Image (cartoon, rainbow, N blue to C red; front, top):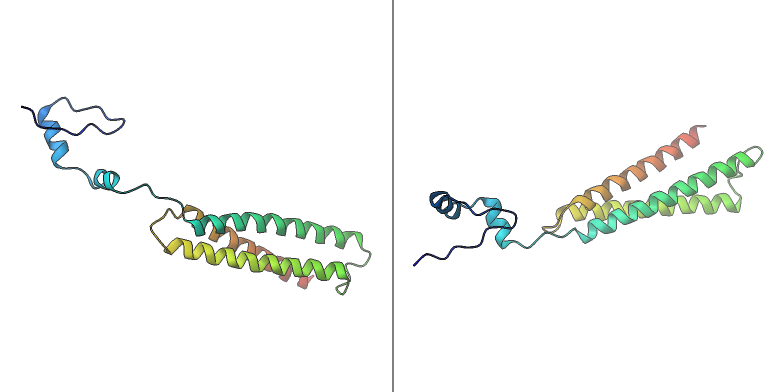
Length: 145
């Protein structure tokens, strides 16, 4: 009577040599053991939230900066800093920076919490930090001009 043998893994041909088959069954690699018993990893929910927040805030900040540029170019002598439009624009920029900060914190937490994939957490953290640095850099550049 032959001994029971597990079916070959998906995409693998069964070995033809019995000695090779025995060696393959007796010494599974770490990857094969992990693949057999571990469920597939999911993406971090915090990382996905951070990434989505970065995309929304990035697009919103780009639109606000374009609006500020158009307002500056169409107003003779520049935008009056006390005008209601300028105040609303400034508050929206600060609100966007706060959202980018929240997204960066979510990305940072998503990198270190749980045993999930960390791709979206890293991308969300990177994009949110780039948004913060870009807007702060533009504010500094604008105040120098």
